[in-house]
Length: 264
Image (cartoon, rainbow, N blue to C red):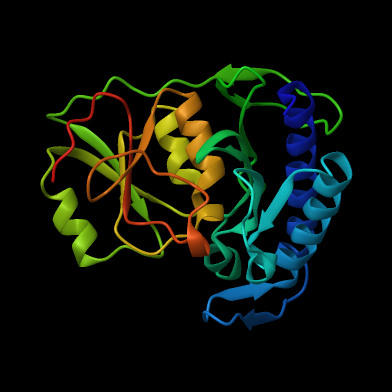
């Protein structure tokens, strides 16, 4: 994969999908349907999926494409693939809380090497550059030309006073019990893949997820966090979270800044 070609394409498609999502979000009431797993889906999910899929297939016809809205039809046979969640945080979208994102990532041999996370309602755009480093772009987000960027680097954590970010919609007692093992200075809540990005920017140090997620939920945020010097590891053995798993299900995991002393 030529990353100098990939990054402008996935950045542009994320921005275009964000525009389409906001048209629905700020428009009249929208219909919410339930998928086979009882998770919600809206016309914004479907429109963003169609836009991103068409763009990626046109630009990279020989690369396997996995998207949340089309995953039932996919059997992975490649070690290299693009993986998309066109609207991560549909529950946040439906409740009009703003914490939803567009996620596009490129995975090679189980590792999310490059990715983009765009939070259109919050006006925040995070991505890996061609060299793998992570940045947050600021400005008006011209689709044809990247604007000013701020390099991202995880914080140097104080293990006696950690900043923890947790899920807005999926917080539970098991997560709280695990967080209680750490010396926590403060906690914040965020939806969707923004939690990875808050660690990448240094706004948080630790994000444990003791609940069901799929690879398209995490790959782009994982890529951004890795590009900022952070890590995403399995909850059970602290090995790196891998991609390309059968069924696309993730195990429980922990996202963290380098230097956080993990607890069992």
